[in-house]
Structures are given as structure tokens and as C-alpha cells.
Image (tube, rainbow, N blue to C red; front, side, top):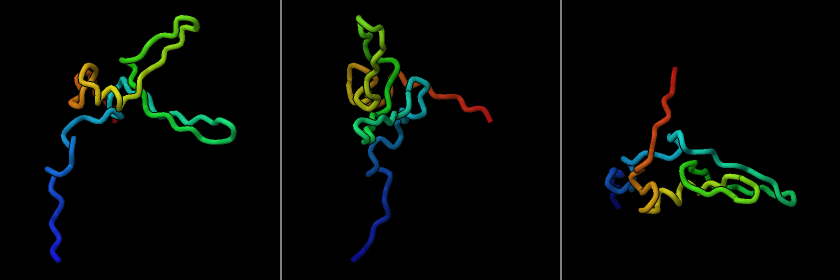
Amino acid sequence: MSFFPVKSVFIKNKNLPACVNCKHYRVQIQTYKNGRIINENGKCTIFGEKNLESGELIFRDALACRLNHSECRPEGLYFDEIIKLN
């Protein structure tokens, strides 16, 4: 039995930017409902809608935006990198 080293060609999306490094990304939220933790996916603040009654902004899941070719697309069309200062 021989083992082959993992090649980068097998890692999909390796060279694409990660949403977590975008300034439009909002982190995952943990909420509690009936004593149980409910995890929500990270949100993209570019895509969503405004509740006309309450005025609340409801953002779309970041991953859904990345997978949608009419929104950010897998390549990260609207990706804007967070500049980290040391």
C-alpha cells in the first residue's frame, strides 16, 4: 500500500479569499432557544433586505452569497479584505 502526498489540486477553492477576512462579513452568532444553542452562519452585510415594518436589516448567509452567481460568486466579486494593523 502506498501513500501519495496531498496535492493542492485536490483542495477546492484554495486560492479564493475567505469570507471571514472580508470587511462585509459578520461573525457567526450563537443564540439560545429553549435552553439549546442555535448556531447561525456568518452574514454578508452587502446582501439582504430591510423589514419594512420594523426597519431591521436582515443579512443573507455569507456562504449562500458566495455560492450564488448573481451575488458575490465563488471568486468573491465583492470581497474587500480587512486591513490588519500590527
